[in-house]
Image 1 (cartoon, one colour):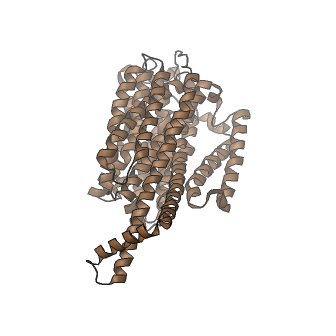
Image 2: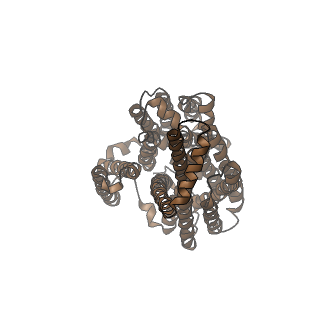
Image 3: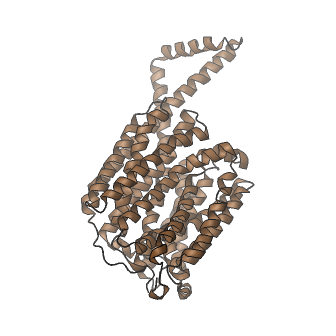
Length: 520
């Protein structure tokens, strides 16, 4: 911002912030809106089981690339132009997604949607902290609930829409909100001025390295669990390119005269530790949102609507967590709040590390509710610790890096828990096989008893025996998968417990008078 722009007038700064926050909500809602409807999308797009996940991955991959670029683009284009253009293109991309005819076209359109949507996320943090320099705790709380509630509600909203209409409306639903955000931004958001001269000094080497590094990393994380990770030559090659690109990106960030992405913020120990917290929070929020629908769908055979209803409980807890964190953030050391949040998050994972195959809505209600509460007790102080010490252009770049950490944590989390789940399920299945081998008589008696029950359905003894073995195999697979979920949640609980040790070293930043974010 420059002094001449006058930024947002006091009487409309709430409206400006509301328009931008609503745009951020839409962009983040679409990350998980397809989570509970993947079966319907798979059928509608004639996609294979190993292809349909690209509906989510393409969005995340493109969004990861855009988020750190948003600071540069907001300065060069102005927040108003960048946000309006992003919201408008997001709306167009949503329409194209609704008309997608196969998995390839859907992946392309979702990538466009994620790329332009990614520009809306960090801009809100920078503008909010600048418009409300004395209410940064409140802004952190509001944006914290938007950042977590949107992806949490995604499966619920998606399940309702798919059940009432069809999967096309998962994307058409964005048209009206997208148009409103675009028009609202053009009408009310006048917070800074553009500096188009910056486009003449783009470091294309850094820009290309960033795209290859983040895109390659996301590809490895997505395809790794399905193709034996580095045992696959393609994944090994992509990982090598991503690593080389990352080294080049860091080198250009440190030595380029006009870097597109500045990483100077990591010189602050508080910012660096807060980013570690955000990486882990993203891991926990996205991984748990990914795991719960899979458990309910594969173990309990829930419908999309039932899954969405069960996951909705997390959102209720997040609202309460926002209220608690917002009331405490300006009164006590934020380290006490985030320490409590991390320990509470750890406890909720420990609770779900003891699931049985019969767990449903009521069994999952308390763990999910408290997970929502403690997630916001982590996020609100984390935002304050990370961004509270920055102003001006540095605030924009720090916001981009900070938001990147959460989404990167989510991408890493989904990939790792998927791998852990598959490996652990195979291990428990093998152990069940060994146990039945050691006590083969009892296993045969059970199968024979089930076969006798099936004889009431079919007069063919061979068919009854086949049905009995199938039912027994399904039971073993169901129990193996349940134990695998328990193992994954237990690992996640230990991760959150370990990171609590870093809390005392994350000293709160000294707040300074905050100039407008584009002063240059």
